[in-house]
Amino acid sequence: MNNPSAAASWLTMLGIEPSPVSHRERLVSALGGFVGIFAVYWTSRILLGTAASPILVLSMGSTAAMLFAVPHGALSQPWPLLGGHLVSGLIGIACLLYVPDPLLAASLATGLAIGAMHYLRCIHPPAGATALAAALGNEAVRTMGFGFVVAPLMLNVLIILIAAIAFNALFPWRRYPAALVRRVTAPVPAAGYEAISHEDFVFALSQLDSFIDVSEEDLLRIYSLATGRHRDMLARATEVGGSISSSGSS
Image (cartoon, rainbow, N blue to C red; front, side, top):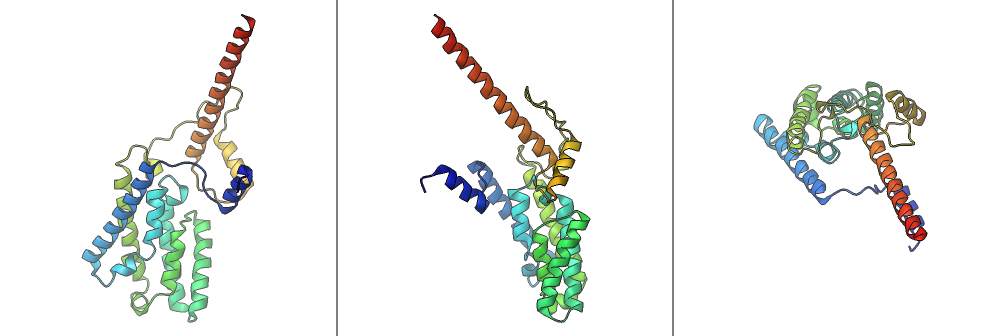
């Protein structure tokens, strides 16, 4: 495919993120995933024994991907993590216990979990796997009943939350949870651009009517960097133009 615009449109259609990420950040994310799952599995074996360990890590792999690869994301923050897994676990166990047909139980648990997370403002995609796994649980999970939500599920979630806070704190360019770092005020826009207020963001997001996994703080930083780059490019172009004019006059 020799047409750059056609290639770009295919990348956009496939949802391939064009923004570059350093090798350092990728390696840190991979190391974080290792640390998070190691902490979950090791602690679960100590506290609950080897039989419970596989149950504990069912949906933690995808949670680890979010907490260590996308630590700034809105869906990775503590409330989506805790609330998402909790409500999804409760719904999944309820469907396991009270809906006899596994097909209906699995489908109902997943749909209800998504709806509940939306209303409780705690959308965490891996929690959908928690609801599904609980609804399709074996006899051991059925025997545990709602106790499954306390341990192993929420114990599992607390362990990986602590691991994410401790690990991401080692790297100054990472923030987890985002609220631990002081909120920055809206940046001063470049000349020719108007400042964007919190109300402007709220209005714009309400018009999209979809959940956007970017914090307001990061959006402001992106806006500031973009307008600042545009300002610098204009300044350089003006300097070059002035130099050419001076050379022509002389």
